[in-house]
Image (cartoon, rainbow, N blue to C red):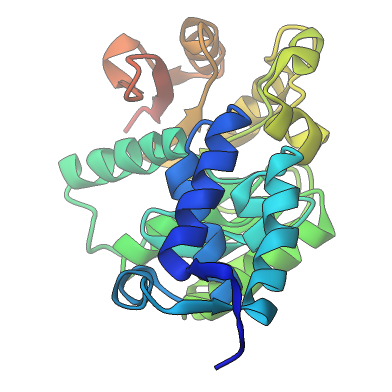
Amino acid sequence: MSEAAGGHTIDSIRRTLAARFAAAGLDSPELDARQLVGAALNLDLTALVTQGMRPLGTDEASRIEPLAQRRLAGEPVARILGWKEFWGLPLTLSAETLVPRPDTETVVELALEHLSASGDLERRLRLADLGTGSGAILLALLSELPNAFGVGTDISLDALLTARTNAIRLDLASRAGFVACSYASALAGAFDLIVSNPPYIRGPEIADLAFEVREHDPHRALDGGPDGLDAYRALVPQAADLLRPGGALVVEVGRGQSDDVESLMTKAGLLADSTTTRSDLAGIPRAVMGRKKP
C-alpha cells in the first residue's frame, strides 16, 4: 500500500471534504463528498463503509482533489461524474443534455397512472418523447412497459447519441428509436402516449437560475421564450395530431404554467383540466396531461 496521504483514512478524507463543501455553502455536502470520494477510488457505498479506516494513499488523494476543486467551483456532481440516476436507471450525460431531476419523475408517474387506468400497461404501445435529451423519460417508461416501443426526438445530434448510448447500456435499444427533429415535426403515424420535458424557463429569468443550472445545463434546453411557453405552442398541436383516440400527452411544466398549458391543450382539441395534473414534492403542479377523445 502506498504511503498514507497526510495521515488520512478514506473516512477522514470524506469527512474533511464534506466540511469543505459545507463551508462553501453547498446544499448537500455529505452526499457530494461521498459520491466524489467513491468515484475517485472506484468504491461503492458499501466499500466506502467497510474500507473507511483504510489509510489513504498519496496517489488516491491526488485523484480526489481535482474532483473536489471542480465541485467547489460550482460544477454539479452529476456533471463531474458524467452520469445521473433517474427512475432507478443510471444515465450517461453530455454537454447537450439536462441533468435529469426528481421533479421530472412526475411525468413518468402520471403517464403510467393513465396507462394503468386504461388497462394498457401490457399492451403493445407506441410512445414518443419530444426533446428526449439523455432519454430519461423515454427509457424510464420503456423499463416499465415491456411491450412498448418508443421514439425519442431532439434537435441535438449529440443528445440523441447520448440517449442511444443509454438505451444500449440499459438493454432497451431494441425497443427505442431516435430521430433528429424539432419536437414531433418529423414523426408520423399514431401514438398511444407522447411525453415531453421541454424548455420552460422564461428567458429573462435564466440569469437568476442557480449557478449549477445556469452555467452547466444547455441553454436551449432551458429557454422557453419570453413567457416560457414557446415550446408548448409548438409541440402541443403536433402531439394532438399524432395521438390515437384515447391517447395522452403528458408534459412537465414550470411553476405557475399549468393553467396556460392546459388551455393550449384544450385549444388543440385535447381534454385537459386540473384533475389531470400531478404535483412535485413541493406541491407545485409539475406534470400536465391532455387526452384525446376516444
